[in-house]
Image 1 (cartoon, one colour):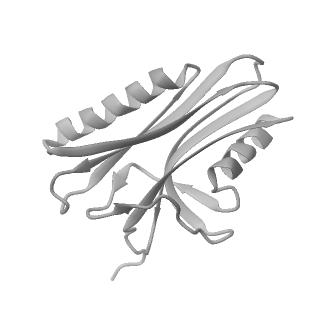
Image 2 (image 1 turned 60 degrees about the vertical axis):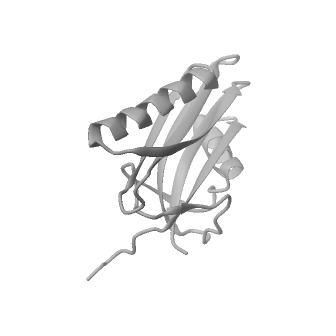
Image 3 (image 1 turned 90 degrees about the vertical axis):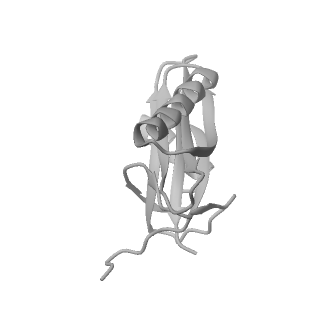
Length: 157
């Protein structure tokens, strides 16, 4: 008996935000990513076999939403912060994919390169043939208090 359904769709989301306080900046980043009115449940990083990507997923307000994510915040004006996520999908749709997340006080190009390498390595460790890697990320230059967020939302269709 399954107590929880296995997600069969996923969506890559990202957002950046500014606020008077760090938590407000994070909230703004979540709102900008389209997940700010949900309860995110951070999970480890596996895409269920056969799950397909959707550009947007309609999520219920207040719902418990499974997500793997990267985030970072800063209150140092002028600092560059970035977060990125990579989803690696197998050639064999009966096998699971892998989600990797990374954040740093660095440009997005650096962060995306690292998260992509992490996804490639995860497939190598599993001895799985890689079909493709999908990435998304966000870079932000802090004004007062800034935050960035990149996530892979898993859901049910």
